[in-house]
Image (cartoon, rainbow, N blue to C red; front, side):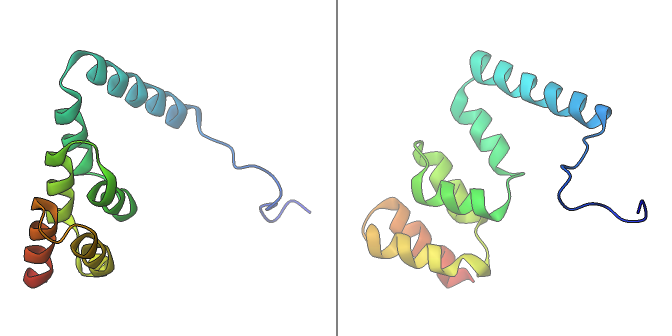
Length: 104
C-alpha cells in the first residue's frame, strides 16, 4: 500500500525549494523594475530552455533579444530558422537566420 508513489497525488515541494524559487522570483521582479528590461531578458535568455529560445527567436519584442536567440538556436531548431527566413527573408532576422542555418 505504501510502497509506491501515487500518480494521482500532487508532488510535494520541498520547503527549501519553495523559498529558493520565491527568492529567484523576487530578484527577477526587482531587476525588471530597477534595470533595463532588455538587458535582463538577454541575461535570462542564456539560461533558457530550447522552447523559450525558439519562442524568443520568433516573437521577442526587442530586436537584440531576437538576434541573440537566433544565434543560440541549434540543429534541432532548423525548422524555426526556416520559418524566420520564409516570414522575413530580407530583414535582419531573416539574414541572421540564414547565416545560422548555413553555420549548422
